[in-house]
Length: 72
Image (cartoon, rainbow, N blue to C red; front, side):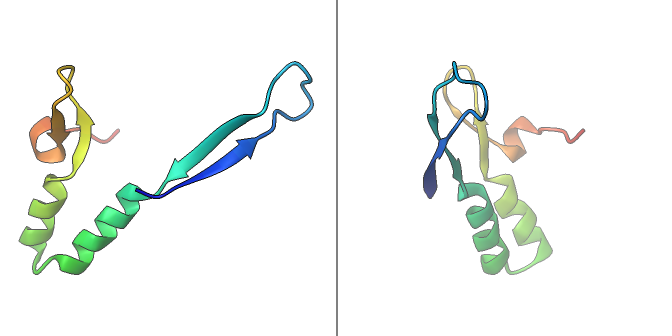
């Protein structure tokens, strides 16, 4: 997992404090690797379906194929 820490300053509001923030590029890297490793469209769909997209309330990993999230 790649993460770059950045100090975020609050701008003109003097009562606020700077905080550490960051961003991750894990998902994009994983998807790009899957594109490169896939042998066919079916293989691509299967591999993308195995990506963990969240966790259940029991903290068990949930893949796209299992959770079936919908786009809005």
